Image (cartoon, rainbow, N blue to C red):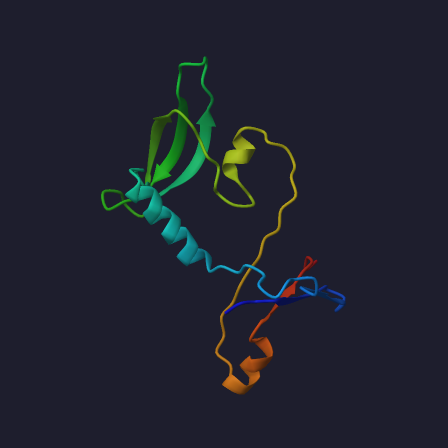
Amino acid sequence: RRVTKMKMISPSNVAVDIGQTLKPHEYIGMVRREILDAYLRDRAAGAGATVINGLFLKMDKPSDKTSPYVLHYTGYDAKTSGMGEKRTLEVDAVIGADGANSRVAKSISAGDYEYAIAFQERIKIPDEKMQYYENLAEMYVGDER
């Protein structure tokens, strides 16, 4: 569906409507992460990348311009038990695409940066109630303290 309106609702129940300035052909991009992530993994593998199922632990930076980065991670595959296996990998470049709480960013002391974390839930509602949400997404923001 094409979302053209978003309602952001604060913990104090103040709502802000977003999308009034969109042109008729524009919309608010919404993705299902599990589908997007699988698509990106498949594209990378198709282009020759080796896909590794693992948890990044730390990175040793190169000691000079010709040395590799050394990634330390826990690898999970058919050969390992559920606990995984500690491994290292030498690489020429590192792309930290590991989300808002990036372990890669922390490992290079990237500092503080602005980010947002979103959660989603899918529920089945009757079609007549779904009409209200045909082009609307609601987002509840704030922290629960």
